[in-house]
Length: 419
Image (cartoon, rainbow, N blue to C red):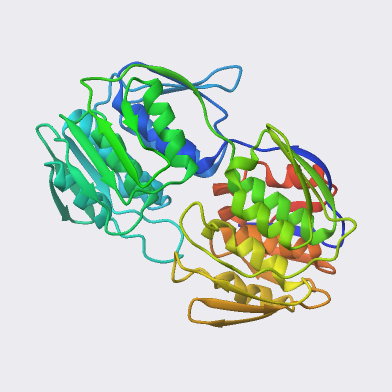
């Protein structure tokens, strides 16, 4: 098993390019099942989760080719298998995103109940209830969601609770359904908008994405598309926090301030100097002292749960006391136990973590429990005294492209080691 070794105490200084968004690319890849025409995608990050989704699509008969420009080309004309097996789905919860496209275009699907990171319940009933409302017959049997439908019908559907992947699945199901579908209490994340833009490029009729009400008028078939995936806002936020905690200066290219409103405001509150352009963000922490910031996670446009671990690390050495409230997942403070090993003073009570900044973290062997916890531990290690060894680093490869290379570009001492 691979580990990361990080020698802390170096300021991050320099510039890096931000990769395409994993959480936008995954549903877009699943949506390629909706058309028999050629799909060309640019800015797809090379990550383990992306590789898993591509393998899943190939197992169904989708032709997938990377060309010499690293453009991803897909064609789902000859899909011959409507099953997403456990061996693939268990490693990535986003595999459930093939459910809606398969039922909508082919009238059937068997998708294993998903696995993935152990950060709390992510109920699949939100996906199932929506498809049932559209006329699908669904049973959960032997660990599989088994669905069938002669033709899905448009429906007015209100999510009982906001779900990003649930919204994406019902959107993809609705684009080929008969009639109009109105989704209320829909997720508003930028990745939802990116999926809608992609589907519109294919000929779908969608309005209201980015709001809590999405209206879709079904069409008979979808065309091909040539599309560029949006930049990864969580990767952007992670490198900004990493730079802030080390007192450095960074320029992020190929990203957008429009994706990071709540994160940028908290970094400014922490003392960072931030400037932005049409496709870049800079952060300078060289003249400021780091101040603790309180926050409460909530669905977009609120503070993202996927940035909680990173700010937890930042607050561990910031001046003052901060309260961090986790409202999305009930089991997402597992990284705090590991931060304690490095000397952090963070107390947990229910869904609230209270930090009191310490002068210095010290290196210790730590273990990553999920993707964003990995990012939080890397950030802590960058600021710690000594050499930190982070185990179970395979989590980071699910969501951060070339993480060592990018950190090395910024002057960090990072290396990957085998156990």
